Amino acid sequence: MDEVAVIEDAAAAESSLDPLRSRLLAELAEPGSASSLAARVGVARQKVNYHLRELEKHGLVELVEERRKGNFTERVLRATAASYVISPAALGAVQPDPARSPDQLSARWLLALAARLVRDVGHLITGSRKAGKPVATYALDGEIRFASAERRAAFARELAAAVAGLVGKYHDETAAGGRTHRVLVAVHPSVRPVLAEDDNTGKES
Image (cartoon, rainbow, N blue to C red):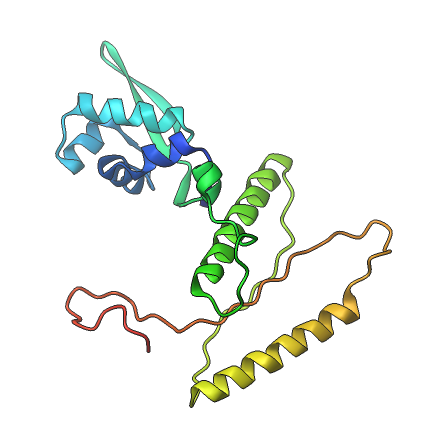
C-alpha cells in the first residue's frame, strides 16, 4: 500500500468523492470483505459489494486474497493507498493555469501554482511507481511571524533576491545530461486547524 496515491482520472475522482465510497476507502486501510464492511458502515452487503466493484474498477482498492466459504468465495480487499490526492489534471480544460494571470501578490495565482505543483508531482509519483525509481525532490516547510506588513514586504524582497542569486549560481543551460527542475517558493498567512468547538476556526494566526 502506498502512503499517498494521486488520482488523475476524472471518473476515478468522481468515484472517490462519493461519501460511502470514501468511508469504505478509509475502512480498507486494513483488509476487509464486503460482509465485514457492511457490518461496520451499517449498509447492506449487496450495496457495499457494488461500491467496492466501482472502487476496484478505478484502481482505488485491490484484491488481497479470496477465501472459500461454503458455496461462495469471499473476496478480501484493501485500499491501494493510505490517503489520496485528486490531481487538477482530473479537471481537464478547467484546471487552474498559472500562465493565465501571473501576479506575485495574488492569492489566486498562488493557488494556481499550488494546483500545478500537485498535478506535476502527482504525475512524477505515478511515473516513478511504474518505473520503480524514486523522484528527486526537496521541500521546506516552516512559519515566520512578521511584526508588520512592511517587514513582510522586506522579507519577500530579500527572499526573491536570495533565490535569484542561487538560481544564477547553479543554473547551467549548457550542461550535458542536465535536467531542468522547477523552483516554487510561497509565503501565505498560516491557517489555524479547524476545530468543531472553536468559534474562531479558519482565522489567521
